[in-house]
Length: 66
Image 1 (cartoon, one colour):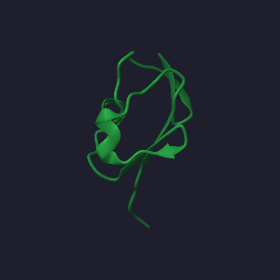
Image 2: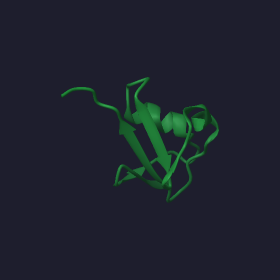
Image 3: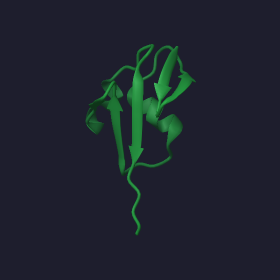
Image 4: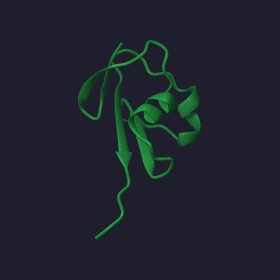
């Protein structure tokens, strides 16, 4: 299926949870926020949230520094 991740088109497996997608694109366990179609999804909901064709996902990682 075709989805958009951080503004770029991406091919993804037909059955994919938001948690699986985040695991594929980031190796971090903390400091990550995800929005699905412009709605922030709480981390606890990622495993049960299915990614659908055409979805727009924004993955934001916190960066510390000055």
